[in-house]
Image (cartoon, rainbow, N blue to C red; front, top):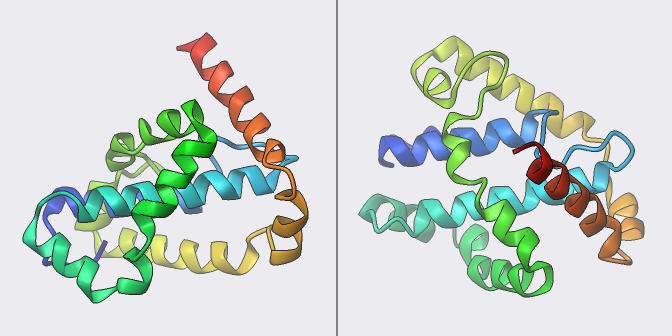
Length: 165
């Protein structure tokens, strides 16, 4: 988000991904199922990162090279998700472009990039989110014993969206 070497569009995508993760209004939000909401955050963040570094931009490639632990294996991991989740991954993948315009507290990613005060507030919200996140290793491990625990929630949300849309 703050990497001035990245093109503006990439920085907007990164900001939108941050907004999506810290926002309680996920595509897959379920008050009773924090792990499903966590998994969709994880997947969308990774999809956004992959789009960012595969844009063909030289600076995006440099970003990938600067953070190998973040990007090594990313494509393989997402391919595994695609194989296992099928249409759910296609649905989530279709959400990535919209991250560039995802609002948070009445502001778009563009505003967070241009307004230092808004950027600082988003950073603070990210710290609170990281500290207060309602999912821990034990919870994730228990809930992820069966993939259907997560995929069923996602499928319900995808079906609801199809009915409305």
